[in-house]
Length: 127
Image (cartoon, rainbow, N blue to C red; front, side, top):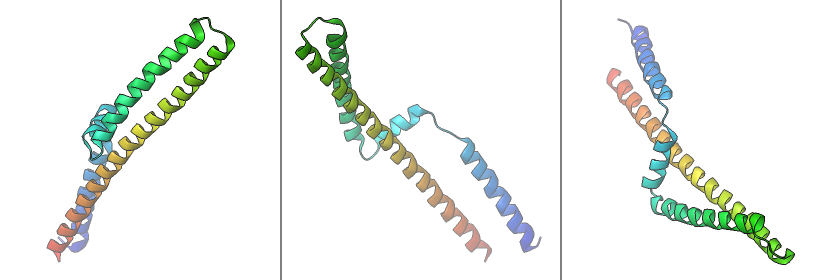
């Protein structure tokens, strides 16, 4: 077997491994779990508690605005609370999803590091 055939076999093996890695796609629940167990897990937990409280405020403000009879000043106050709590809820959810994306990116970088290390070890054995 000459060097060209060895290189071709190595590339085919790596392509199979890469295809297996690319086909494997985790569910959203795995990403959420990783966000809670990552380096900023305590902050994700805190943000989740705050988001739950903001959700309760949002529901209460919506109920007060749409279903309870008030004068126009009180109705405007509930509308402002409803709008602001919606904005806060959106910001908290965006931060949570960005943290999940950060954890996913870190995991992919670690996979890439391991692949480069395996390739380096494989090439150093052949030389």
